[in-house]
Length: 363
Ligand SMILES: COC(=O)C(/C=C/C1=C(C)CCCC1(C)C)=C/O[C@H]1C=C(C)C(=O)O1
Ligand SMILES: O=C(O)CCC(=O)C(=O)O
Ligand SMILES: [Fe+2]
Image (cartoon, helix red, strand yellow):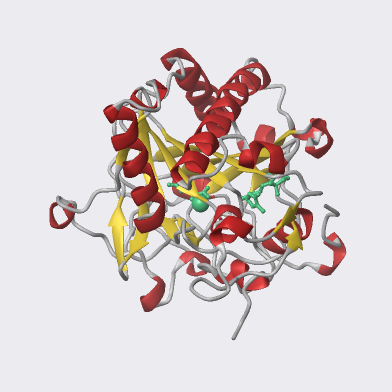
């Protein structure tokens, strides 16, 4: 995937939000203030008490496939993927230490002085390094967020100059964490295949050497959370996304369900999983890549560690034959190369589900 021609992109001045709140804690610069219809209206949790994303217990999916617990949990998984595009997993088997270690170095990274973080800049038109991604013009609004993103696997997508030397254990912890998350993604894709009545290895065989990238999102508190957006509404371009919210995280992630922004309430030791655009295409729209966004909090910071797991760039993506029926369920997406979709995704601003227009067959 070739980088965009940097010289042609003028992004204007991008203020670092952590620095902004240090110097003027109560000021929100104009470039962060959203139009009234784009603001992250704060939703009371109480109004959503009966409206939570499903929780899938992975320990039940380790049981024999004929066991009632297994069958019940697979059904829950398939309903989650169809109706929500999101679920949380508990009892996922990743050691608490691994989860804590990545959180620790991510936090330490964002807490370093700006000069140190600037050694790993996200250049305009690229998606790796420290800064704000998906900014393509001088008048584009900015998110109330600092990001640090890295390609992890295969090694060919890595930019070693962007892997920080500080905090000391950053790379070691990220390697360990990424191995565990990769195993989890492979496992989840097996269960997703089973839930679709496909052969367990269907996705693994199709994906080849899967692409894996990580993005750490740091949302400092904002004196006017009602005016800004933590992360603009978007769907993920991946096949699956795994999102870790820092311990005792406040609510920030919201997903669009039936035209309402529903908050995702963090559960201790759980990971949030969402279906990306690639699985939506492969399942011909049966499993949904759902639009989501992050809002900020007046008092509290929030840190999330997000892994994008996707097929190799060489892989041809199209709805799987088993999920298409010319009469009852016609093909909704064209075929394309995943590398081309990745390029398209990262060359456009985050704008709801617009990226997927790339693949939609319009009638
Ligand atoms: C800021 O980056 C992203 O939000 C992002 C980028 C991921 C990537 C890298 C950081 C390194 C190179 C590979 C890749 C493009 C995956 C989002 O990733 C989504 C978008 C696509 C497409 C995808 O597979 O995950
Ligand atoms: O930080 C969050 O809650 C959302 C992050 C997200 O959606 C992403 O990084 O793609
Ligand atoms: Fe996302």
